[in-house]
Length: 572
Image 1 (cartoon, helix red, strand yellow):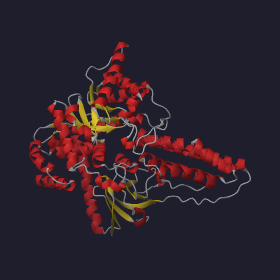
Image 2: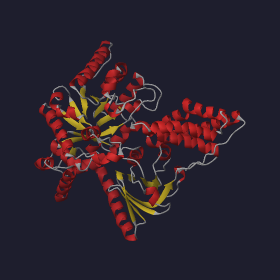
Image 3: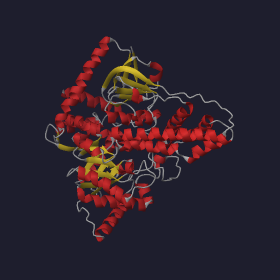
Image 4: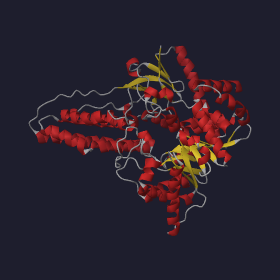
């Protein structure tokens, strides 16, 4: 029996045989060819076949996972038809080289270019180019790619990483969980695991070395441990744990239509983070009391031009109407950092997370910003809309953004368009300097929504996408907790409400701390809502408040976590 540890990214327990997804190694030989036109035709045919593959995968991804996942394959189709890469390959053929070699040489130029960039988003584009190139090569060589959709028995997937093509083809009836060598909490494979609600561990570094095809494996998605070749006693122990976990999930369904109230009667709101209108149904089915974060950038991705005002209006209207009288908090466009648009050329930056992104980009491109605001204002009459601006660093930025919003509202009213009179306008609080002067912002905003993913990244000076410094992702660090408390206190002193839409809002250790601090709204992935509601029902807010000074006086993140976990054990 052997244990392999990694990063736990999706809870649950899986017990099944290992199914290794091997990287197909295409041995490419350089050959001189005589018939150049025939070789170019071979390449064009392989590209056409690959395009057919990707269209099918895209449609299946849209059906199984929604538009967000399908958008990845729009990007793959763009790579497939990239004139620079394909023309370079054809130029290689015209120089007398076979199609396989010419394609490999052309693709390597782009792969090396992307991998050398500091921007994590651009580095991920190298994965896309490899994925697409491998597909074309398989058609040129007549070699079948490893096809996860053909799995017909219950397995746990073992892979170096899960490419977008592979993840979209996973059969949820058979794939019980997966373990990968690389990846982090925000990687594509981690997000997929949470969508599928299957246990997953990433970043193990040794799974492909240490786990053989067909070996029996247990995945503990809570602890981040994979147990290889377990004893009968250990299997029995984990089968019991799995049964209890599934029973608990079933019991949580009773909370779907319940309000979120602590044991001593304090009520808070549990909302969902969503990316598209399709996510509304899932959110409501999981008991969401609102949408705490609608990431509008997904409306801009996976296409070759900006969405029109009408397209955006229809999307916003669909979400707002779908939520009925429940609040819908919409974040204006947050592009930049790790999110880019293929049709928007942004300047190359050494530190894109600290550069022209989010509200900075919107103020730099006011026409784009005004189009989005007009669409939101028109949609505001269909329900309970709240608008928030991301990555606000100064009062001037908030005032400038709100000024543009008011200007567009006045224009619409002058045109005879009805706009809601009860529109709240707030900001994401994700920059430490803004958290420090939250008392000044609180006088002008209607609400705050704390974005912990970036707040932690900026406070700890640690790229949240960088595995080498992942130990600095410390949501319970005293510095983070004191900033959060400062924001909540500042807002409440002005009679304003505070939400949180980062990963921490659904974190089991963080929830009692946030409840004690007086957080009003917790927004998280839909799948986390019922567990969070169940947890809050068991807490007394007044008792937690009495522990808050003890929590905030701890010296390290580990000490905070230990204190909270000991308190939870004493409660039981």
